[in-house]
Image (cartoon, rainbow, N blue to C red; front, top):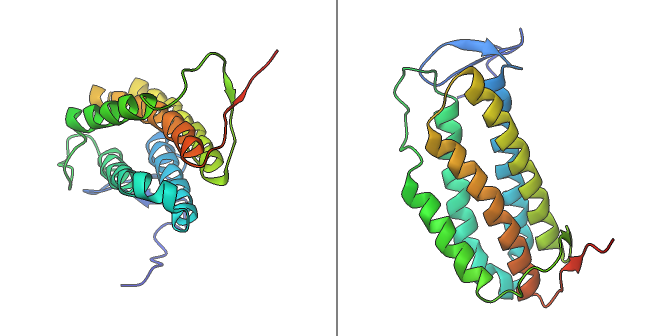
Length: 184
């Protein structure tokens, strides 16, 4: 199979299950932002390969999130009324993130201030992923207004940004890097 099809040369792209839309369609923008988030998580995973104290704790959960983002992207790329060619995001996936957030927060110092994004390279990249996730959420809310989505999809993306925030703090903790509080 060739990587180029020339079908997008006119500014349109195909959806799962058929149909074509402009490449700047809100649906395309939304799952494109999800894809961007997934790529940044790939950078995080590449960074933690040689970071034993972090990779042992975060490698598997982040790969799981990447797979879930593909599920979400597939759902968003499927026209309304068509069958999604993969398993849909479920509440159990949100519950898993919530359990992991609670576990990580159990070892982190409580937040008393806002913190500046940063710390080690891994945490900094995770903060970048969090901000991309928030943009994906804004795109998803706009898409939902135009074409209602399953509520669980909105919940998943909202929870994921919380998750990425805590994972960034946890990565700093694992590397003995303190959060930098925002001081007015």
